[in-house]
Image (cartoon, rainbow, N blue to C red):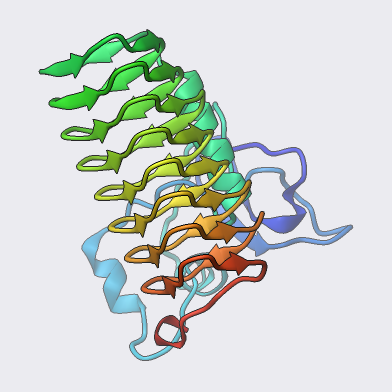
Amino acid sequence: MSIDDPREFGIADMDVNNKIHRFFEKPGPGEIFSNLASTGIYMCSPEIFDWIPEGKQYDFAKDLFPTLMEKGKKINGMLKRGHWTDVGSAAAYRQAQRWMLDSLPGTTIEGNFNTKSARVVGPLKIGNNVVVGSNSALVGPIVIGENTIIGDNVLIGPYTTIGSNCVIKDNCRILSSYIFNDVTIGNNSNASGSIIDNNTIIGKNCSMENGTVIGPRVNINDDATIHSYVKIWPEINIKSGSNIKETITNPKFN
């Protein structure tokens, strides 16, 4: 993939026959021999594992690929067009999700869809057995997974994804947020520009401010506020009424 500024990425030198002759990680001035980012999906023969030493960190671009080329092994690349981003940050992940949602061709409903007096504006992709309560509004682009229940008077705004087996209770506001599977959000809570991972439970009257990242299996109790750009690591319990202004880590996952 050709990129405007290759300084933060690994670059590849590829010829007209798609053969790669060298890689370089995070080049500086005078070293940027190409603007082709070494990214995407690597397709390798199973014998690739024979070249990777056990018990140490070993990077494909910095370690493995240069070694293979030194030994005369052939590595080919493929030019692709389209959007590309390194989703190593929450902001980049949200941007990638926006690109995906912008590509929705229209509204698709798979299987049963149950709603009463709700306002639904596409484009949307809705899985099987989704229920939307009374006087709720879905304004696309939105993707909702199967077996998800959305309560009454809920606003789900553009650029939102909600996974499978989720429960969004009454009077919630979900805007530009990316919610994974098996998540419960309690009455009158809001998420704005948030990422919420699997099996997390959020109580009532909670606020996930813009740019928050909530890890899997987190329990956020009632009346809590998570300030903008704060990250909550997996399996953290947030007490009722908490006002979280700084990232909370879990040593178990260091």
